Amino acid sequence: MSSFDEREKSFEKKFAHDQELQFKVSARRNKYLGEWASKILGYDQSKEKEYIQSVIKADFAEAGDEDVFRKIKYDLKDYNISDEDIRKKMDELNEKAKSDFK
Image (tube, rainbow, N blue to C red; front, side, top):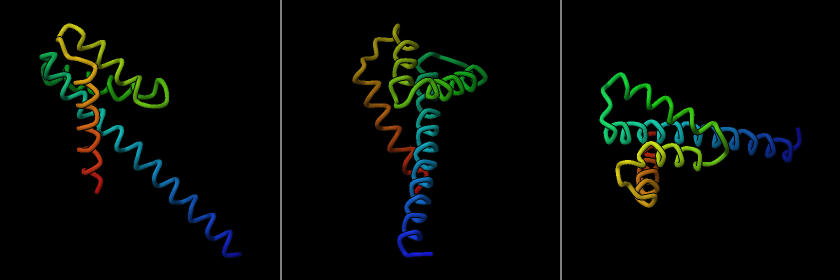
């Protein structure tokens, strides 16, 4: 095998690893986001688990984070939480999720 082929395989492995890690970080962030929103919504423990799963599943609607943002925004529309506050919380929880995998 040529060094070019080895290098290409190495890049492919790194790309796959990075994609898997990003998926895990996003899922963890969405879990934390679901926990945060469910507390605002006043859900009990069983309703909270169900809600967290709905937030995680919302991320599969389209690429990126806008699908999750829209869900949280809609669910919290009666609680006077701004778009900026939701986005800040998403960023904060994304950093927390990243640190879980270090």
